[in-house]
Length: 172
Picture (cartoon, rainbow, N blue to C red):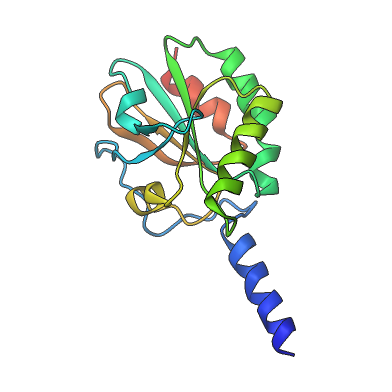
């Protein structure tokens, strides 16, 4: 019985944050506020911050995801379509990957391998300590947010279904 309870708790921890629903998270960063900076690692495992990747006068789509989350990895083809549909001078994409219970080495290795194997040709931050989750308040992944050219949050919860239409609303 103890083993079953432990397995159930592990399952809840791993998949409670990985969800296909678009329920509103209760503590999301507010629309109209400036983006919150946080530190992580780039794909070369060097320290980087979100502000290292943000240039004003350009829109940024933030995608919070995890290689261990099947709903997240299912979204990558849609992000590739978006990357192809919008000019890189108008829209930057920044993938922020978060770990599950794996060790740091496993998380870094699996994330880098996934990004390279699937040719995800946009910027990535590996958020080893889930700092972005504290700063942005998301509870489920994948979560998409849009930062405007002035650095303010324009959309704090974009559904998968409306992602392209929302971007077209802002980027002409």
